[in-house]
Length: 343
Image (tube, rainbow, N blue to C red; front, side, top):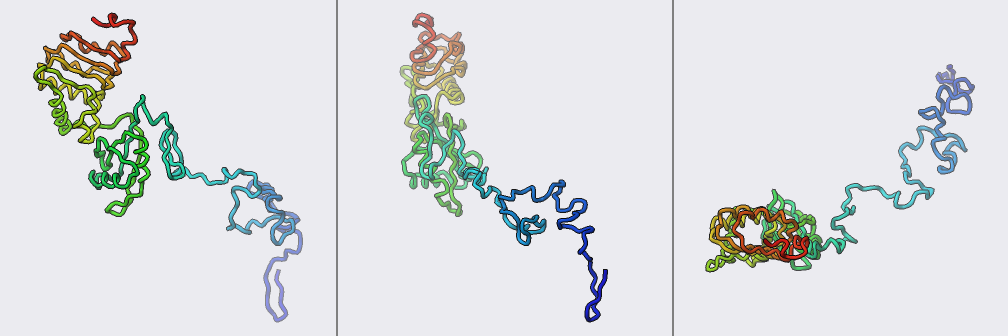
């Protein structure tokens, strides 16, 4: 349709005064009309009570599909149907998430661990302290800074490098917590904050390398009585030299026991007595190396260890052993009296 204005102007437009083909009005709406993508009225997708009825320009009418597209939508709802805990956004990688079985922060002040996990078999648990990129900082710098700023004094054991990480171990829960609280507190020379990771472990890692073997030789030579051909290995991990070097060297680790037996066979084959008391030994397999290498060995003492099976003693078959002491081991509880297992 065309029309002419008062001054000869032409107007071109569509006359929508009729009902035919009208859209977005109360009459015939065409194929889809003011419906949603699935053929349902758009208004039915929302709660009229929730949005308070009609929208501007319409009193109770349908909401325009082009209106208010950029406005925020309250995904949590404003009617109060959801509890506050469900309205909070889930943050899967938040630093405050708690993980069962690990130390977690309580109020950012104290690190908590259940009392039953602070000890293992009646003794203090071990904790592994990891310093990312610690190899660049050096051992002296790390221990100096931690010792100066820690609330509690601590003794680091078995300091070593694992790739670029610096690793050491602490045998006390409170000391480990005090060190962990220094996470991202100490500023390094490069301008970054020192990160500290804490983990629980059964016992410290130990690198059995050439330098460690040399330390073993010194300890064994101090414990060996050449005049009586007796080697005292009781409470081996508590040796003063190990503590002075910051080392925890448990004889119950197979790698350590194997290294000790090899040094004995190579250096003092004339030995007659060895005392392994109070070392938490549960396996004796490394002693197989003594066969035909220590022909004068007569006495072995394993008092107060953790030997649970008689099969562990099979490695000594054929040795000229005259005295074997097993007092304080679980294997003794199997028999009613000593005569049952003493041969």
